[in-house]
Image (cartoon, rainbow, N blue to C red; front, side, top):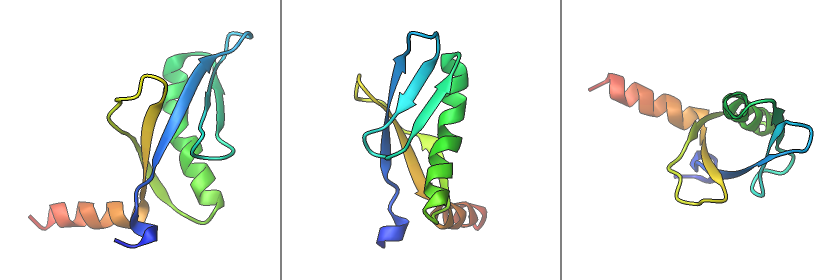
Length: 94
């Protein structure tokens, strides 16, 4: 697997602000800041925000939730789109 085929984990920290909004930031992905009025809306917006930040750096990714073992962070996986396409094609061949 090359560097461009690695699927990094993006740990996301969620906090409730004083203005009634929920905020998501990440120590792993500089520039990630998502604000929404509900946790459900925040959860729905996080993958697109992660994908947009990777796209701004020239990398297309498919973002999905990972298993959560850390009580302070919510992990997401940014799978390079080429890797995801190959996996889907491989599943179709079986």
